[in-house]
Image 1: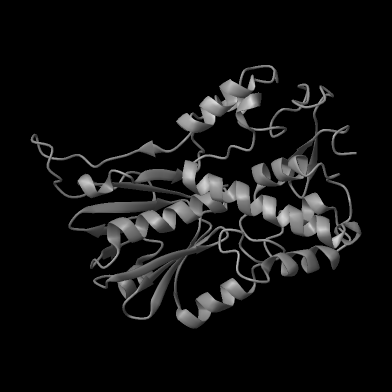
Image 2: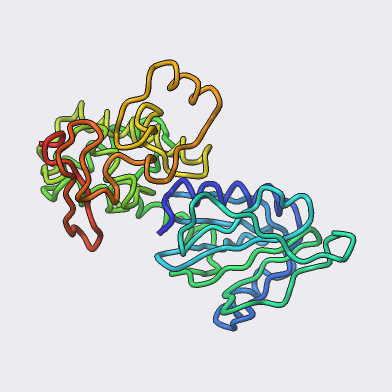
Length: 311
């Protein structure tokens, strides 16, 4: 499931390529025909994200609300203004892949291609198109209904309003469930998924099974700040990278300080298997202490942690 940074990037893409444009909205699959009719021919005013929810605001005071879930994905194509657009969603990709519509022989944009597969909704303008497939939620709602959706969600680290760290800490303290389970609860914190929960708990050296009510207020606020930091990095990079360059040289061997500084300066990305501390590294040695990383099922997803560093 795409995590909060990917949905934030989606919102930015929609604003960049469709903001202020009149859109043709259709449902090639047919499942969203009634909603598409309400939005068709209207102008996109703004695109925003809260956690894993995307809200596209139209000039008739209606909102296209999308939650990709486990299987949803957007694909994009169009003219040169779509150079930064990518396909985001399931199946997950390494990085984000450019996808462009077919043009004329001279490379000019010739309009959207015929829909492929079960396209729930297509948004099209003079400069390009966006197709949605497989989403858990795709609905046309009012502004008041959009506010109700957001009200049910916890604070979003990528919004990080004044007081959100305290709200997050209070949310944790009110529950006796393991902190690793609470980080996946979108009413506690919005946008964190399986990768971020494993990685931030390791980075803070927190026992994933610690009850939220037992976490000190100061540590809860530090956890919030680390989530804010790594998720903003995800927005900038288009990937979840939680390690530092000293762990990118293979087998957990630390890089020399000069090599680390050079990697940071160049903006180099690590290889996929060096990007995380514990996520999907069960059975491998911890990058810090060399203890074997463990995995277990928790709230329907696999949790990864180091039993030594996170004791």
